Image (tube, rainbow, N blue to C red):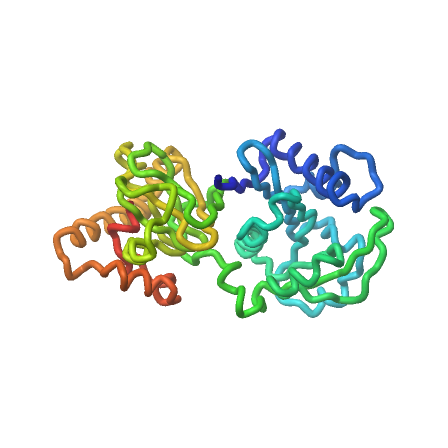
Length: 347
């Protein structure tokens, strides 16, 4: 079953954030010697603060907080003096913290990456380049490997919480080469950001052929396999079938035609890579954005005309095997839409 990733906006969602912190840090990890059923602080009320939550159904299973630069300061600056470092940096700063995952989801592929990726996306949108944070010492090796977290000193005591912490710095323009693409969303976006993303494991069905799903999807990370309605949805089939299936990569859209005409999806879309992260827009949000922007409408018309051309001009398409191979190359992921298979972009 997929996980739903959301920006906590409603009162209920924010309540889930504070309860989840208590469940993970007090009940599961016994990291804090507290009896609170909710954990929150004054930064949670700031306009510059965003809390991101992952849900398994209606149950919150992971969360992370981002606080952008503001007139009051960052949470990490209350525990450590980042002043000397700040004066040498170019670009805005932010603190990422209160990172918590329920025990049974800590081995979920892609969950840590997706939550951090959501924070980094928000930072880039606001011109922030540097993460100034304090973290639980055991987490440092993982985050050093994933995002290049650099310790600024030895472990110190956070007297407010009574736990050891390590101050760290992360530069979004100096992420490890092996993970840079994993933490960079597709550059070009047709729509305004949605408050919802979904995370799928390999071979999970994203949307089944014939379903009146009424959502538009953009792939933020991973590869999606396109199957016909008649193909089994509970397994990938043979390796040969999986290799021959059409595949979509980061930046590509599907569900657009179904959102336009209100009919069911023509094909079944399945997570092909180890994990697939998609941004999701409800049909009405998609329609509203089309009406509000002639540029978006013209973009859609161009892609639809290319889809017709692809249908009647066999030289215009790309064989499935060639597309599958090309999906691993940056040139396809970063290519203009007209260089991709329009029939797949508008599924």
